[in-house]
Image (cartoon, rainbow, N blue to C red; front, side):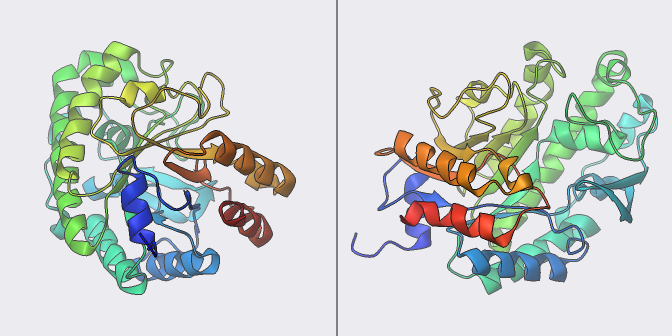
Length: 339
């Protein structure tokens, strides 16, 4: 191929093929610019153009999927990237039966983000775009006010319903809720195709950590519902993100995905040498961007590119870039693939 486009590289690398070079991107929250479709779109377009990223992970507000069922948040009060949760539509586990399947185009928070994707596509007509979608299990945890991570709590909910009550005492109701969420997300994913998304950044967040769900519970509560959403997204290229420590990326080797993103330096996780079937995405500790350690960012990027030489690879931070990042750190990071 004489001249590789951004779409050419993206499609080839996530098909397990080599391009003329690896591709690179980074993503972060802009918490003052994520409450409307217009603000999110304008900020995403500007951020992408500033660094000329090879592809875009659209980074909506963390709560947008939980909002679809009526949760309310205070967007004037954030803790890191999470607005304070004011209400949950599931104050007790027996309320799980109340969750219903939604039509994405008729649900305000989902329609808002479909509009954002359309606007981003118009502003970035030639750049691959993938929308962030959380797993049904993650969405359910957010709805009830529980963290999808072992070490964090949901900002604003002091006494959420217990995991024991959700998934043991009311197991059938939990499956009803997960199924309703999965079907809603599947409909949303189909609408995303029409809006211009090239696939998904599908985040199971920290739910793969064995301290939150053991293997049997994860396989029961996540895997079948993940399959529903990913099947609906089979039109595009899909990157799965398994977050935090003990993220078990090898657990997803049989998933219908094209790329796999995980924290290559977190406790209990393999590095880029891991035996994984999908294209690897990552390589640089996102925590380095919190302190803008440019020397270490460049070194880790160089090491990752050297290790993955001759293999399809997407260089990125291992998770979302902290809010304190500087322009220089991002410029230096992006330029490593061009040197």
